[in-house]
Each structure stands twice: as C-alpha cells, then as structure tokens.
Image (cartoon, rainbow, N blue to C red):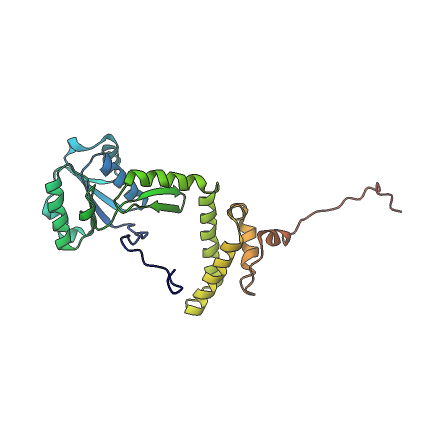
Length: 256
C-alpha cells in the first residue's frame, strides 16, 4: 500500500466475464486447440462457425458439426468471412500457419473485430485462461500468456481447496437475489445500494454449508428480514421455522 492506496503493478490483463451468448464467433481451424475453444464457446452459449477443410477436423469437432452444435465452412478462411452482414463478434485462430494467422489478425484489427491467435500472445486482444467450473461458478487463472500449462496446475489446486458444493451455494445465492428483487424491485440508486449491501452482509455471515442447506422456506424467512435491514444467522432462520411437534402424553410422567 502507498499512501493508503493499492500499488499499481501493471503488466496484467483486465479479466472480464465476457457475455458472448447468442453472438457469432468464428473459429479458424479444427484441431485439438480449436476443439477446446469451441467447447468453451458452447458453454457460453455462443453461435459458433468453424472454418476448416473437413479433413482437418478432429473427431470431437466433426461430432459437434454433425450433431448441429456448430456450423461448418469446408474450406480455408477468406476475407468474405468477416463481411459486416455476418455480424462476427470474435475470431479465434488455431492453425499451423503463422503467416496466415498473422494476416487474419491484421485483417481483424482493421475491422476492429477482437481476435485471439493461438500461441502468439502479441497477436491476441484477449487470452484464454484455465477455468475451474462448478455450475454457475467459474474461476479463471491467467498467466498473461507466460505459462498456460502452469495455469492449469494452479487452477486445479484452487479447485481442490474449495468446499464441496460451492457451485450449488452460488446457485442458491443467485436464487435468493432474484427473490429479493421480486419483493423489493426499486430501480433507484438507493434501492440498488440497499439490496447490494444487504446481500453482501448475508454472504459475509453465511457459510458455504449454510447456503447448501438453505431451502425455499429458509429463503422466504431470510427475505422477511430485509425490510428491517437485519441479517439473521442461518441458525436464527431455522429456529423461526414451526416445529409442528405434537406431544402425546400417556401418563408415564406421573402427572395426576
């Protein structure tokens, strides 16, 4: 810290969760690297077109083409593939031709289309990191092009450290947020700040195990505390649930 503020390190990337759902992405090449890129894009609900001669497709890529998961152009890349009417949002190249890759990259730069040229960091507008996935939870480790294989090892270590059911906990937090917006739908700055502040307190106070165990009734009872602006513990929420216990006295206690 310098003067109480974080020290700027520089040399990093701006790590974002890029919302590519429904957008058109070109993948140039059909080998193993392309297969991994395509898999990531499909997980993000992108519309994918792979450009590669049929004989260059791996079994996985060929399967995704034949099953209709992606579109296929059976030839090499041509400039017409980036014509404006095709609405291409991103280009990924994974071909064993450095000169052709550089030409594609320069063409993308000219048209201001973001591109990633596999294994050539200087010709990438963005990098792919190693991703841990557990339901809605995604954790990306990036080495900024220095050591992709090491990133995979670090990602595995992080994944192994997370409590079991973390992804399920994240999903339940998302469900809780949606319920909260339904009962407190204000769109003003004050309303948004209040919801965010209350949710932050809940996430700070409740553990992963608490969120895993939380059910619909727990959510409803927790949200009842939003109005007064308090954050009960998980145990407090459970104690407020009716027990529905009926005592059946059979006289064995010796009462008269």
